[in-house]
Length: 322
Image (cartoon, rainbow, N blue to C red; front, side, top):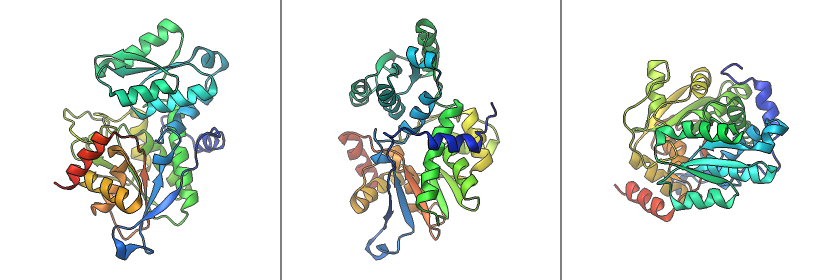
């Protein structure tokens, strides 16, 4: 298959979304009291998604495309966060066995959430070896190995978020989405540009977790040899091949935000919007709130997840005050 997902397949993914997937709301966010009633920033609340993050959309889409034999044997993937929970939940509802390769030091919070949804956890002590272990488990058990960066139907599943954004805010002028491997950003950008070609689509990355930004400057997927951000959900040190192709084809720009920007966005979303967002989840909104994008445009930012601990919330508040 082509690196770029066909628009008809995005439409099909949207039409076939499992009924468990929530059509999450869009709400306006005023930066201060004087903006109330005249907001330019709107938030797509995927923190209210069934597993607390957008990735369950792609998990259901991917599992839906498996053959009956593959579904019976199950799938194995690597994740230490929201994809683990998304696949675990989707597998439980669809009766598909799920195994997730997770690092030994994964937080008990994430481990428990994954196991509570019915998935098996396979531990790995090396982040760079996780996908290799996925392949080994798949070969040993006859399971299907999933590469959450490169699978065609994963990107199509991510695109379903872009459909809802355009349909529910039809006069949107600018869409903001966080970027890590580029999966959700590429999928959203593709859907938005097919539906609303004149809408600007901007990716947002932390300054010290900027592999897609560096890759965009280089014109090819490029690895960074550093990573340092509170936004642990944006941990990719190199964008995926398929996601990067979508970023290049459909995204207008990528901008960078500071750690303090992320902390302040967390506080603003929580205190003014009553919205709880994890660090990676608030990155898109932080670009608008920090003035890193055109704030005169009617803007829709994806709040991609709200799965965080009290310790993470305390660190975000500390960053906001720095």
